Length: 253
Ligand SMILES: C[S@@+](CC[C@H](N)C(=O)[O-])C[C@H]1O[C@@H](n2cnc3c(N)ncnc32)[C@H](O)[C@@H]1O
Image (cartoon, rainbow, N blue to C red; front, side, top):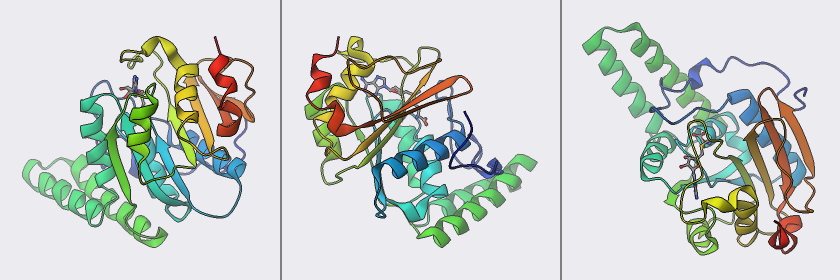
């Protein structure tokens, strides 16, 4: 696929996982250019000029959301992260905390302190990256309202609690693909159709759900057609209108 929105290959070095943004074993980072492309495509499909309330209901480390919050601050009103896994939520809180008032400045101070104590050039570079990201965030509109909540993505009641006070109109999510992450929870067998069915119960019909999977294509979701689909490297992307998922997705296999 050719990139329609993130056409210039930017230097995303400051956003590298494990530098300013935190990482941990078992929490794969998502490609930044692809995240940016999918977000912009989903926003374009949603239409309108208002900023998005963006939700990743399988947020893992929160890397994808944090990166989007920094890159697209003017187009984001709030970020909502949820996941079933406690360790993921701890990491996501640390990463999304960077977008709070003074979050990146504090991370910069921490990294500069480590640079002094351990004399590693990597920390010096990360401290400088933190400052640059902090400036970028300020220029884009400052701290991003956000919340990190536990929810099983197959459980409509848990999703409704997670979304309380947010009214998300854009979902971008990189779902488990069985190498480093798997579906878990009591309804794990429901897979992607189960997730979309549950999400449709809490989203307004004009919300857009962007799903990214590993593989050649996003598996068919009953008779629901994605509004857009594409392939990038080893991943496939499908964009759904929440209103298309409601009801019909209930009869999915
Ligand atoms: C590929 S990772 C997401 C990576 C994330 N987008 C990031 O940028 O770090 C998939 C996530 O789905 C979560 N997950 C698995 N089963 C789930 C469920 N039933 N409900 C919610 N999240 C689930 C896993 O805990 C894992 O964090």
